[in-house]
Image (tube, rainbow, N blue to C red; front, top):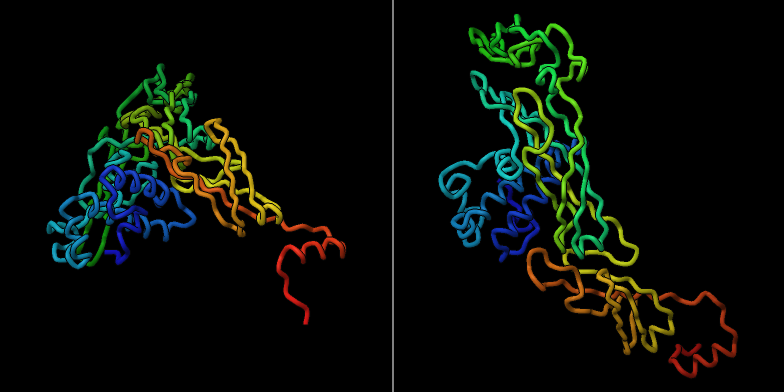
Length: 370
């Protein structure tokens, strides 16, 4: 079990409700799934496991109460989860949110192998076609105001001519006698034999083979069909939020239809930086402005003209707070974050004349020469 703080792992406050816990897990699990991090897999697997443990505890009211009162020591007395049961695997938790097929080798929701266990016999559950993941670039303005987008994708549907077999004149596979799998014996130690069922390599587990290649799909068993999806982007949506279209993806014979996941990707804005539900507006001012005060006029993401005046002396990186002028908080009516105007002082590059220096010395205190 991780010794990290579960709230820190999910990047949430201690008073987070169940929906906030779920949302935090979904977002981070998508980011750190090992299959999405092939070049950083060791770190991803560690973080993915920590996310799973944190979610299982904080999403369960009884476990959460024990954890809040006694920490991990209280959970350890229950052998992992507070109820006397070991933790579910990270992939099992992930599948509850995103789906994903079974099969003898197990497929992750990203469509890659999760590894095969040492059990005897073959898992008879139907595999699920690999999930299609599509990144959708969205401007900060679209995320603020909400938006609707029509996305057209090419989806692989079963060929209407060969019904997905890839050919005609269908016959029972001779390699597996129409079973779809073969029995393999493997020595695992002195006098120890492991019997395993493996998908037939000739028919790929389909139990049948075609004598002639289908001319319509060129033997693939599928054809591309254009399909349109309507995405509803709620006001306040965040980077890496997603929309799941279950069973709307690619088809493959003898497998469940795949899912499609559209992931929101926030584009950089020329004026604003988003920090959670808050907005940061970096504003350059002159040295003179920093002394006598600054007047700011800006156009908000919703088109509103916002004015702010700072009368006091402005220090480098000082801020003006504009309450409720940040991003809308998703699924909460009339709730907004804050806006911060951050000042950056631009010092003059012009060399002052002696007269100008004397004027400044009369107005501002300067260090006397020794």
